Length: 138
Image (tube, rainbow, N blue to C red):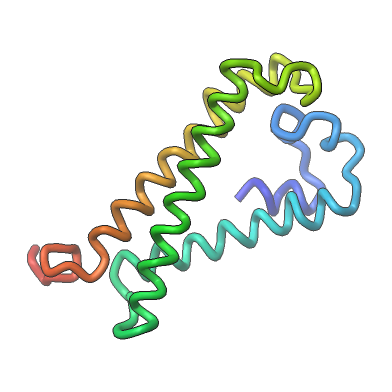
């Protein structure tokens, strides 16, 4: 997980992801942008695991499924919004995004938000269904 690597002081790839923040490393960026996002990734991994097969029953199970749909929506909205903003240059020079950052965001970082949103949506849809992965069929 790159966010933990970066939070611990690593720099490979950070400059094309975070621009000037990579050099400055203000405290709020390290805490929220690196450690915080890394922790969110771990929470997402646990949620994915619960959706894939270990989802609890009852109210807790419905909450897990609802969280899966929420994560799906958030990731898709974020992915589409960033793609549109970068492709149309809607934010203009106000965002101070270098051509290198723009390229890497469009072709490497941002597609993972779109793929993640689709995967969480599929997992939420299949979670708890009789035809889903927990049916025992091999």
